[in-house]
Picture (cartoon, rainbow, N blue to C red):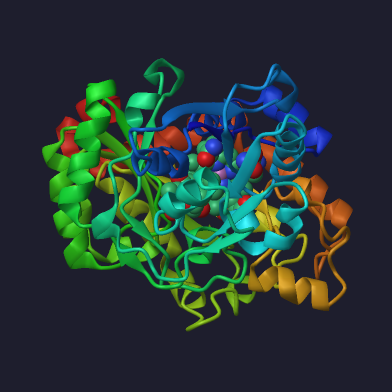
Length: 443
Ligand code: B12
């Protein structure tokens, strides 16, 4: 069979003020360019599980109109997140009209399989690895079911090496490797790999090394983004992982939680091993807003007192920190915009990410807000961009949240504030690295 693997691969924001701001402010543009150039690791992974008998082509689609004519294939396999789900459906409809069988997988359809089935022949719910070969075999023999569920948890020790060779490396400024799925914390709003793997699980480090080596065959000196949700939960595994990545001599980025600041030994190892930046969800500087967002142990509430110290501890190790804030949490009112600005001014994280609370389908947040009648337009998946407001905040108006996001963005991403923050970061590196700091800051 000829199989077209099609990644919905755009970045989206519908709020026109924010889009205009994004066009003019370096902070948004830089991050936008970085993330917009990531390939679909899910599809590259499935490609690796596809028997050589089949021909596999990999496509990324930002504008569905541009996929004209449709590629010739027997099976079109789509991967999408929520924001582009409707675009994915429209494209799948076109393939079906052309008589081509379609299958959709990924986080969105995992939570909305019946909706997806209105637009495709087959939906895969959950992790793709356990069922992908069966899907292909059943399509080939004409007996495919409508829904395949990967009920058994996939063991990452069996992870195949993603087919990086299908990529044109010039199109990307970084490539991804995944070292774990799931997260021990249960943040109410999280719509990430926890939807696929309720259990926290890690990939053996020798597999991670093998994947980076495969990546280096197509891009000898890659910048690696770990597409993890929380890389360093198990600090023993973390040490092995960091040592293995360090042996690959690459620069890398990952996402983790604030407990990393408790482990200066690990931070030092990460710094030596080429870690250039980590992203950590701070969510809000305000304890009242953090209360209850981590639904298991209220863990995030108990971290807030050490937020400030954590920023300097991490950055003194020469690792840039991207502090992420979620605006519009139930415990935050309009004062949150000033609080975030103040926190950022006083602590100087290298990067700051501000997004609005977003009820993604499949999350406890979505269920709660729906129950409370606070979702403005249920099913408006195109607004699940992290920048568009589609719910009624508890302690401010929708307009206040929209305006507050834009104004805070205007402040945080202005050249002046960015330069000041980055100068502060350099000073923090100097604390950690003394006279070596120019070399460190430049690398
Ligand atoms: C890389 C990435 C991107 C890349 C995506 C590249 C691509 N085309 O896949 C880019 C930059 C394009 C991107 C864009 C966006 N992203 Co993004 N992104 C990520 C990131 C960092 C890593 C994802 C990843 O690589 N996962 C690893 C792979 C292996 O997992 P997977 O894709 O889920 O695939 C597995 C299964 O889902 C399944 N599967 C997936 N597809 C298919 C297809 C078939 C046929 C089958 C059988 C199985 C299958 O099998 C795979 C293996 O088990 C995550 C955050 C994170 N740390 O995970 C956010 C994340 C996925 N992004 C998110 C968001 C919000 C966005 C944007 C809306 C941002 C914006 N404003 O534009 C857009 C949406 C684009 C869209 N298509 O809707 C959210 C999505 C939440 C949701 N449920 O929708 C996440 C979780 C981050 C967050 N803060 O919550 N993103």
